[in-house]
Image 1 (spheres, rainbow, N blue to C red):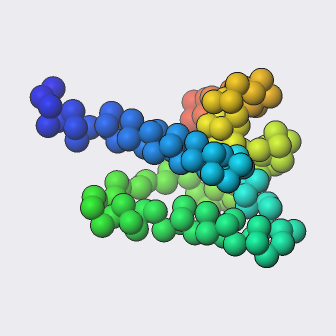
Image 2: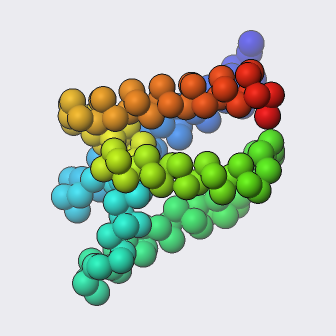
Length: 145
C-alpha cells in the first residue's frame, strides 16, 4: 500500500473521526462542564430552561448539519441500509430503552465515561457491545435477516 492509498483509506478516516470526537468531547467538558452524551442532551430539552435549551438545540443542530459541511470538501460515503422500516423502528425503540436503563448512551458512556475512568461507564459500554454482538449473531446468522 503506497502513501496515497493509505491516506485515502478508511484508516485515516477512522483515525480522523476518532480524534475529532475526542477533541470535541474534551472541549465540551472543559469549556461547558458537561458530558457530551447525546441521549442526555436530547432528553434535557424536555424540561430545560431557556438558557439551557439554547446550547442543547445548537449542539443537536451541529450534529445534523455536519454531513452537509463535510460534503463541501469531500464526497459523502454511500449509505446502505439492509433493514426494513419495521426493524429500524424496533431497533430505535430498543436503543432508547437501553439508554434509559443504562442512564446514558454510547457517546456518554463509551467516549466520555471510559476516558474519565468511570467503572459504571466501562460496565455499560461492555453491555452495549455484548448486546450488539448477540443481536448481530442472532439476526444475521440464526434468523438470516
